[in-house]
Picture 1 (cartoon, rainbow, N blue to C red):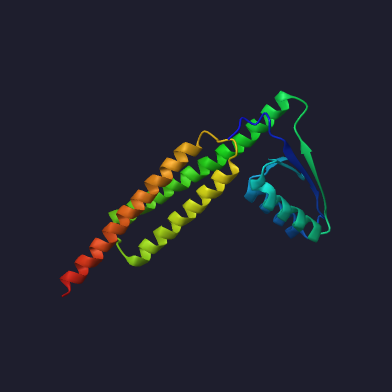
Picture 2: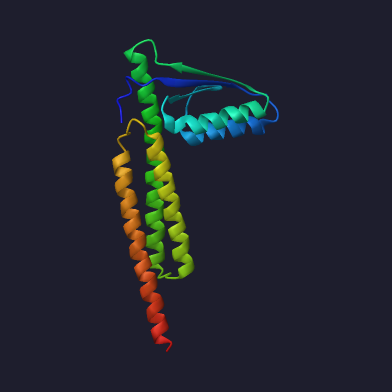
Length: 187
């Protein structure tokens, strides 16, 4: 983690043909996926660190395939205020990502609570909940990778993921207990 003052930034300028729009959307999605910060129409930035290299290369490739134009520049700002502003904008974007993640953790907990309340202790439901937990884990890993400055919500998100994991393990125990009791009762 760094305070952002000594980080250089990559500025990506992309110009794509208006039609078909799928090319603009594909490049936009790739840049959003890696956590690039939009600065204006067709202008994106990320800290110049290795974690963004593959996604930027993919966005450039998509631009080229669409017969678009792209320019990548390295920048640091004219002074400490510019660096601090970019750092703050990037961290605010990561904070928004973490807030969305935390909201999904809440939805996951609510779903587990509903299944427990309704005594829906089936292997199919357990598998569905485990898939949801795995999605949260992947998302957490991806957010952690691109949160190069350490947004304040990151620690809370890590704790919430641990709580979701424990809640899912508790639900799994309830499922297996219910399945074993049902099996014993039918004998």
